[in-house]
Image 1 (cartoon, protein in one colour):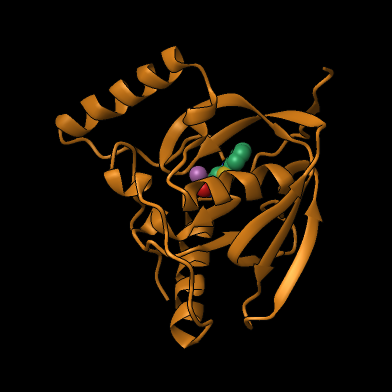
Image 2 (cartoon, rainbow, N blue to C red):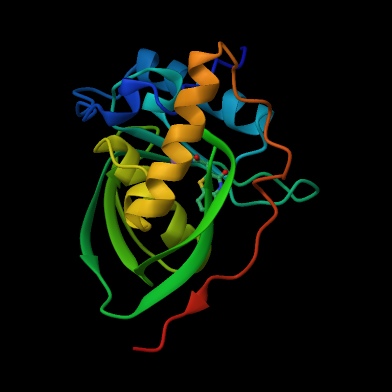
Length: 190
Ligand code: GNR
Ligand code: NI
């Protein structure tokens, strides 16, 4: 099983709304496996299928550090059914926007309903980094990027930088900072 090439900003695929998975079958599990290969290869903590060009509502996450036991999580057709009023800030990055980091504020906790790798319905209440990550990934399923949550000035600046690189035929370099280099999210005091 091999890693797949990543899709980078400003690829219009990143703006596509992904389609629900109709049946969790062998093809779905093959996609999940390819996503894990790609995510571990790029040292990311999460990946949405559209980041390898598949417009399906499939997300993989593993928050375990480099030297820890892997904890692979699979979310198929994930939906946020509740989220907290309380918010937290985290410096986010994205494998599709290499080497760019900015603080994003989101609900601190999210209740997520989804299908697992076997197609069974599950529900979890995520907090901390898992909450940040699952919200970031569900955004991808809806064609939304973390830069949509920052100021227009910053968003336009990073978008132009990646448009220019693309126009010059450059492919983004492999991320320099390890995206598994995790901090704790910060509580926001209203
Ligand atoms: O690897 C990733 N790290 C990360 C760090 C802070 C907030 C969100 C993320 S997700 C990102 C992988 C990715 O781009 N998933 O879509
Ligand atoms: Ni991302």
